[in-house]
Image 1 (cartoon, helix red, strand yellow):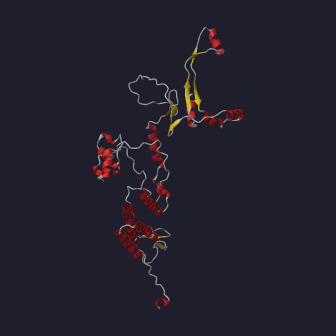
Image 2: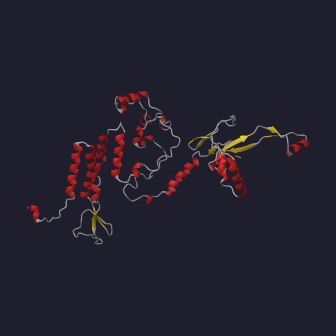
Image 3: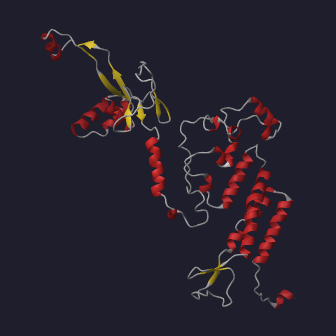
Length: 378
């Protein structure tokens, strides 16, 4: 019965395990058999009951005469919806009886079952997944070691950024990324926290426990609480909006639109921070890199710090081109100017962008002589 219940769970069906009370056989050949021997026998029946809606789903997979019989039942029977509460992938069922079983051993560490890792424990629809982590951890480690190679990483810039190049066997909280030290470890914020927000108190003055306060203590490894629970943490967006929006112009305008709706965000200050910390350093850095760039041969890919006197590749006589394109230097200039004008940002930021634009114009100045007509001087 347990095996059949496991199959039902794998098919998305929810079986009810039933067991009748012991009863005496009062009719049939089995009664006559034991009466001849002068005995009475008590029997106890076990079984599985399915929802009618599940039965309807099973009937669609029948073949031959059984399928025809089910079609007749389907026309006359009223299939009711499941009266079943669910939390994510789990079903809430009522508990009829609790029996305590005393173990002969002092401690019970784990329950090991021969064969399959998934099974139905005891009698009832209690699906158990034997996943204590020992075998799975070794398999995951071996998968990373055997199936990973640096040859899989892209050769473009940033290809090695998030690659698992180092394995550690001991987790030391003092050696991880400092950003996680500021994460809260409380299950709820105290009332004083909300009162302090009205007074614009400094974050360092808030009495909220964070990971940093647990370093060097027993609590640094466990008991890290969170404020909001969730039923399913794996049903969120498959791709972030940053990935879905293709151009930087779309991303920054969508961000500005969202900031405008949030009263806690000072819109102009947030946009100025984006320009000062991202756009402007990128524009200035790319301009500087363009003036110091190398030259590359289009045939053999040889790079030169300066153009050879012969004006071509000294190895294969191929053409030499720049390694940094003009478009990569100017890519954020237009967006930055539009944001400053549209949202009326500070004059200081406006002037810095103008200075950066002058530097770019001096680098990419067109030295070609333009021929003018005589009527332009009249």
